[in-house]
Length: 251
Image (cartoon, rainbow, N blue to C red):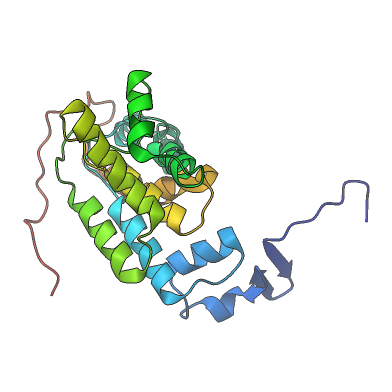
């Protein structure tokens, strides 16, 4: 071993063998879901089925939100210049931060501050508002009753991930309305943050879940831009029309 020898706990590579956290990848294939594999590689242990189902719902919830989010506009703009997919995707991901998709990490920190610190939710919200500090994970520019939030919390109850952190999120929502007289519902970032806290993930990994979820959507937008749009076009962030399939149900 040389002077630059270092160690990793994640993946072991040998001739004709790949093991992630001790499990052979070829043995995992077809036996666990991709969300379960994500949990394994991040936390080091295989999750049970309910945990995999909860993570799956989180990832599906944020797969895309149309053509208007900054990450999508950035990705499509870069693609429009003739740049390759990886460059456009990188640009889109780099647009994800504090005010777009990046609220998950900060919302997780808020919930942990309240729950782990044993603070009163109402007083915590009051202090934040008095200081004019941002409360992350609440309100949405389009949705007053985000169906994704509702469904995530429903699944959290069904699967056993609705505890003190979800309660804190609902408490913040209620306190904001009582203090400000304005309803700012828990948005999808706030809901994801609460559930990830229930699952024991650290806040520093919170935004990673939004990035993993949104990547397929960004790729779809980039591909559409590259294959169906004129190069170097002026991309209006508002004046666009959906022309895909009409609403349809699962059968």
